[in-house]
Image (cartoon, rainbow, N blue to C red; front, side, top):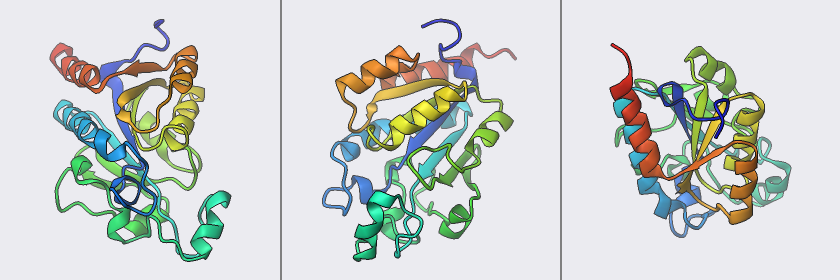
Length: 220
C-alpha cells in the first residue's frame, strides 16, 4: 500500500455496521448468515479500540413500522407488517458482543432525529437512513472533528451497507481498512475490487495488534 492509503492507526476510528439482533441472531426476521459467527471478532476489535482510547461509531438501521423511512426495496414488506429493527424493540439493539456495557440500549428517538448517542467515552451510536453510513448523517463532520483520517470497518452484510460505507469513505479521502474476517457476506471479487481502490484488507488480529501498538508508539 502506498503512503496515501496506508492506515494511520494512531488516527483511526472503528465503524461497526448494522450489528443488530434482527440482522444477526439465528432465526431473526432479517438474519444475515455469518454475522453471529463474526460477532466475537467484532467484539474483540471494539475492545481493542476502547483500550487504545480510539473512537468507535456503531452505525445502525431503524425502520418505522409504516416503512416511510426505509429504502424503497423494503417499504412494501414493512407495509405488509414485517417488523425489522423496529425503534425501541429488542431486535433493533446492538449485539451484546459490541456493547460497552450490558445495560446499553439505543435511544431511538435521538438517533432517528439525526443525533449521535454517546454510549461510553469515545463511543457513539448513529442511525443511517440508507445503505451508506455517510449519506445524510453527521458522520463525516464528527470524524473530522476527532482528527480521524482512517476508518476501520466491520459489520453485517458486506454487499450492501459495509461496501457502500467503504466507497463513501474512500471518496471522502479517508484511509480505509475492511476487517475481512469480521464482516459477513464478503466474497472474493468484492475483496479484489476494494484492493484496487486502495482499501486495506486485514484480519481482526492484525487490526487489534496495530491499534494497540499505535498506543505504545505514541509520543509522550
